[in-house]
Length: 124
Image (cartoon, rainbow, N blue to C red; front, side):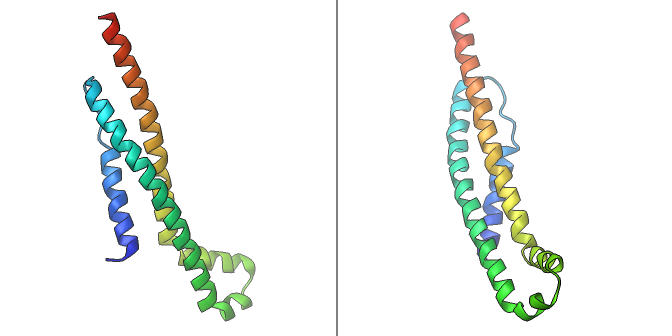
């Protein structure tokens, strides 16, 4: 299995977790989920950095392997060629970036829910 496939598989597991709606009003469930999301937030940040590095390497390889062709075509076509050569990695980079942002947003939401439940328990 290639490194890209491993990253995709890991991103898919994170995506599946993010798509589960936390229910009820159990503060312990919120805290457990917040802990897990914190780990996913950190991991997705590291994955994002790794994918950006893979994109840079893929661009360098595409440029090196096709320097003669790239030198003969207009810059706009060369950019499109490179963009096409790195399309899969660019898609993965955007996906992992959105996973990272979703982890952050869900952490914010959970902190709000935890605060709400604490306040509610003090009133009751």
